[in-house]
Length: 205
Length: 274
Image (cartoon, rainbow over all chains, first blue to last red; front, side, top):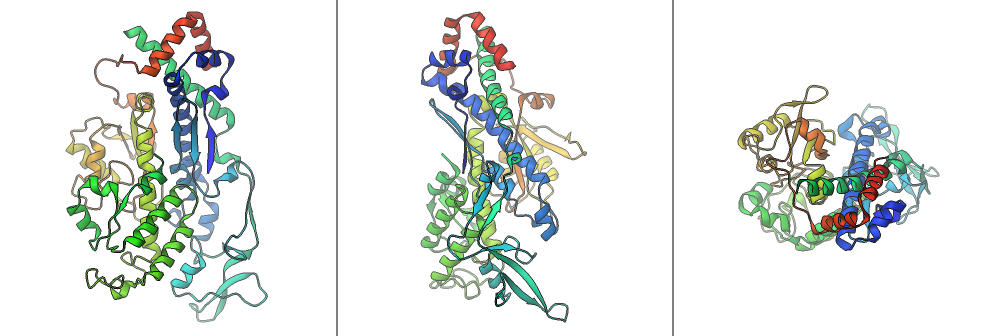
């Protein structure tokens, strides 16, 4: 899970800090709500837009948009916000999304190797699921992959389903999140909107 | 409440009924608070399912891990799709082809269950966050858009038309063209069109009954919040006189700004606008 801190007080300029220090819990929460919601909308939209353009690996292995696992879209849909008088946070609850903050090394936890799909038959599936589908999966002696024998063309051919690795490092992909200055601008906009609404209401009253 | 917490708060309800029977005989509010899965008659499996869904929603597990755990649980409970389900189901559940959607252990069934429930919980959380006073003011509308590709997409333009017609287009944009000519489906958050879509207006019986995405089984549609300026261009804005009521928090801020004086407010606005 990634947690983004949107608390107004933590990022406030001198003028804004002066205002915040005069507020009780309800006033502070009002400002945190504005800042946090703007950041949440920005982050969600950014990730969903990124999902529309980033699918090369999936499309190389499977055909077309319907075959993708949609992991980035799921990350976008997982964006949640939490606001109180003391803090505002936006969270992204998606495995592997931490690569947005830095390289992410994945190690096997329950088996000796990670299984990296290398064929359309294996994409998005565990080995157990491929076996459940009636496909015979085996590891050729001395080799670091799992394969099956494909007899569909008449001539038996070895088809590599999964590469076996001891770790995998996902490169840092900062573009999966908006830039820090964009998120700070969104937070500021939220605070501005809150104050502007108050000025408008007091003026109309 | 987070999406994971919402899932964990549901009460498991074993049933031999299929989806259509559940929709027809169980009130929407009960369905929302319960964990049903068509033809799942074992509470123990539903408890495991609930745990798996919460861990997926929280990001702790991915879908592959959840499927693996659930398939193992079904094996332990002796589930056999072709034999009519769990031991002791006594013919209440029809046998299903292995690998089909009616096979609880099939990849397609598990994916549908995990995706549908996770998306529902996340959308409910998004709907709640989108209904705060700030969100309603600054983002008064939702736009229904495709977020997942589908081999055979549903005709959402037709569903939008039918739902809009059924509610007299109250709070909803009719026929607003998108960039490539397709109709944009945008409506105020409190428009009755969302409930009409949920109810399957136009005669659609594949809906889930929730006024938030996914509106139908396996749907690839999702929501985007629409800023007030964009909504206003489509004629969607608050009706009547502007709201002048202030929340206690706004009153606090207004009083503090009053004490700090007009120059302070002007400088603060200038700084926030920079």
